[in-house]
Structure formats: C-alpha cells, structure tokens
Amino acid sequence: MREATNGSVQSGRSQKLDVLQCHQMPIAVRNFARILPSARRRWQVAGTLLLTALGLPGMAQTRPAANPSNIPYAPVPLPPMGWSSWNSFSNTIDAPITMAQAKALHSSGLQQAGYMYVNIDEGWWLGQRDAAGNIVVDPKAWPALAPGERAGDMSNIVRYIHSLGLRAGIYTDAGKDGCSMYPDIGPVYLHTGSEGHYEQDFLQFARWGFDYVKVDWCGGAKENLDPDYQYGEIARAIARAKKITGRTLYFSICEWGRQSPFTWAPGVGGTDQAIWRTSGDIVAPIVAGGPHASRKVSLPNILRNFAASNHPEAQHTGYYNDPDMMVFAMPGMTETWDRVHLALWAIAGAPMLVGADLTRLTPPQVAMLTNKRMIAIDQDPLGLQCIPLPGAPAGVELWGKLLARPGARALVVLNKNPQPVTITEPLQALGLAAGAAVQARDVWTGEPVAENGSTVRVTIPGGDARFLVIQGTDAAVTTYATQPERGVRGGSGWVATNVRALRRSTYARIVYANRSAASIVGELRVNGGTATKVQFPAVRGGDGASAYVAVEMALKTNAPNTLEITLPCSTQDVSVQSVQVLPW
Figure (cartoon, rainbow, N blue to C red):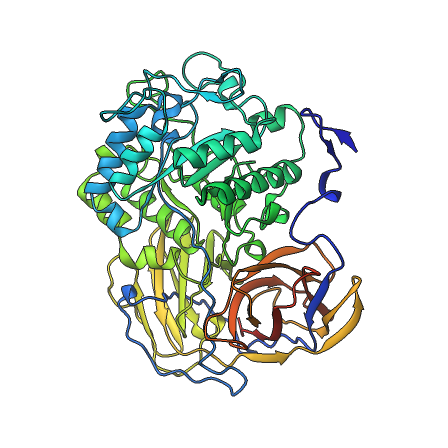
C-alpha cells in the first residue's frame, strides 16, 4: 500500500476497479488438444488478406462439420490510422501547423484511404489552470478560426478538423507534470499533466469535441506511480466523460513498455478499445529548421521497436500493441526502409499514425501509404498481431498472420543480411491445406509469386523484406465443445484440461453467444498464468446466435495445458460454446 500524490490510497494491481470485481464465472475448454501438421517444415512464405482489396478471388473452402461456415467473426474496434504531430513538430505544435496537416491529410488521398485522426501531441498546453482548475490555453497559439469563436478555446481547432470529415486527438500526461518538463525545444513547462484532475480534464477534452486522447507517462515515472492503477483511473474518467457528453475518446496509453503494459493495459479500467506503447520513441523529433534538424531515422531502431511490440497474446478484440508512431518518409529513411517499415507495422496490426510532415510527401510516398492491400492487412477485422514462424535461417525473420477471410494469410519475410536470400516454404505451415488451389501475390505490386500448390518461393534482397498475401484453403480446424464445471475461482463455468500442443504459439477461435446489447469483457488464462482481457461483442441475429473472436495463445508443447475464460459475476448473457484450434 502507498498513498497516491492526489490523496487516494493505491494498492497497485491488487486494487483494480475493473470489470471483473466479484465472484466470477470461469469458462474454459475441455480436451483442448493442439494438432499441427507432422510434415517436414521447409521455408514457408504465406500471406493473406480478408478483403477484396487484396485482389485475390474467393475460393471454395473445405471445413470440418464442427466448424460450420455460418459462424461469423464478431466485429471489433480496429487500430487507429492518422497523423501525429510529435515526430516532425515536437513541442512547437499550434493551430496553423495543425490546420496545414489536416488539409494535407484531407486533400492527398490519405483520408480516403482510412487515415482519419489528426493528433495534437505535447506542447499544445503550457500548464496553466484557472482558479477552478480548468485548463487555460495560449490564445496566440490557438486563436479563433471563425467568426464568433473565442481565442484559447480548443474547440476551435476541433471544429476545423471535423469540418474536413476528420477526427481530432489531444494529449496529456498521467502525472502532475508532463513531458514538457523535459522539453525537446524551448523552455521547461511544469504542471502539464492531469493527475488530480482526471475527471475534470477528460470531461473537458470530450466537451471540446476531441475523439482521441494520448496519455504519456513522464509525470507518472517521475512520481513512481503504478501505471495499471493510474491508467485504470483514467479509463474510468473517460467512461464518465462519455456518459455525460456522449463522445467517445479513443484511449492511447504511452507508458513506453517499461512495466509490461501488455499484461495489464488490455481492458484496463473497463475500456473496450485501447492501444499501448511497448517501447520508447523510434527517433527524437526532427523539426525542419530547428536545433535538431540534423537527426536521422535508423532502420535498427525501427526493427527494435517492432520486436518489442510482439506480444500477440495480448492483441485481440480491440486491444493493440503500439510500436510507436511511424517514421515513414522522415529524414534518413529510404524507399526500401519505408517499405519495410510499413510491412512490419501492417502485419503487426499496429496503429498507423504517420509522423512525417504531410505537406512534404511525394506522390510515390502517398501511393505507398495508401496501398489497399497493405491497409487491409493492418485493418483486418480479426484485430490480431502476427506471430513468428520457426525455422528461419540466420539473419532472416518469418512473420505470419491469420486474416478473417477463409484461407487468407499474410506473411513478411525480413532479410537482415547484406546478401539476398531465397526461401521456399510449405503452405501447411500457415494452416493451409496442401494441394489445394492457391494464389500468392506481392502486397506492393499485386504481382503473383511463384507457387506450386504446396509451397511458395521468393527471393528477398539484402536489407529488405517481401510482403505477401496468400489465398488458399484452410486446413481443418479442431473444434472442442465446452463442458460445465463448478468451483473454479469462486464461480461456475467451464474448465479445459489435458490441452496439448505441438507448437507454442497458435491462433484459436472462441465461439460464443452474447444475448446482451453490449460487449462483455472477460479474462482468458492459459495454465493459470497472467490473464488477458477478451471482449465478447454483442451478437446480431437474435437470441442464441453465435459468433467468434480470434486470439493467440502460448501453450506448453511438452505437457498438458488448461484454458480458462472468466466473465463478470453479474453476466448471464454470454455463453462460450466451443474453441476451434487452427493448425498453425
């Protein structure tokens, strides 16, 4: 126990006012066995996409009787796309810069491709409050933009952004002081955090009309606060603001991955959509004409952040790992690095927040950012992250991703060696049926990739990546019906024992019914380990209709596993019907 700086008592992760607060109803799966192909593994290159944007035709699917094709996936919130001010403007952000970037987003074709958020980062506020504790904004930096408006009112810039059909994002810190106490450019400003004013500030953001809020951790780190607790309090303040105003604030957690946010950020405080940073910044801001204009982006930093973000067990049903806003097209980047960068962020299902000055993008750069196949993989409706595939040679990484369209996969082959590498990979390794019709295409060009129905073959230049989408036929999944069992974690539900696997990381579908009108957040545990929050959205189609959500699980390969799903004690509307194990 320790006393918080705002006078409240904290007990860290033991005092969580989250969705799961009382006697809980575990739901689990019995006889959950993992069956993988026993065929020899060679190099596999597979990739896919759910949408017709991939340019791949629909193909006949063979499904086991236990996996009826009429069970749809449940729609979940997708990772945000847009622009953020920090990388190119540091703490110099103001209304003219924001307007210029919003115009560029609107007119360049980026908005039409799905880039919707205009996010104002650090530097917009200098830490002043009035006698009532309300935020006071510099009227010169944020003037009136239309007749009848008042200077210093952030709703002015929000109205402008909304007038273009875009969404507006804002920034604060979880502590009393924000990151402006460590300015990249200009003087120190203290008191730019929201601690002690959570309900007041997030209600103000909603009343101004913002759609998104990023909450940094400079003040939280300075005060040695517990991020699980603080971000939970913030999530509840956001929920309260929505209840009062009707406006949703998309929640961006920026704790830099120091205290493993992938273990507590999904569903923190009951939130139903969130992203969380898993590492530090890829690069410090590069402001044209500023004191640090000579800074350059490096590919190793991009690869470092991508690797740090790979926690697929936490990414599902509207919750996302965030490897940082993108450095695409920034100083130091090359066309090859830009292509590798986008491929990794897309297959990871990461937020696609451009950090470059949008007014300086070239037509080829815009074309790369708006590639329909790339975006469709990032925005795939299952909301999953890629998983590493085994057997890659030294200096090569294979990353595969399950997509929502039956038989669809995405794959990145990253070659960190200076010399080219040729890879041949069996399609069975991505859960595709051998010998069935298959089409593989390069994501960037749409050109077909060599395949023979069982393998795909590609050559990757040194220091480059190949990004593929593959349309094949799903290999048969193994479906396990749930069975009731009592006395687990103080409630009733279902428990799975004797769960076996041949490979540690696998995808699975949880088939369920939700008879309520809202999403229900539960917890998933494997072998009694750390729980991850899982959403069960409302299912359309009447009472008893089913849907599935997809998850990744890390299973033991040399011993039985146990799977447990737990719902709030007050929930009677969700029933888990089965678990389908995919043969990855």
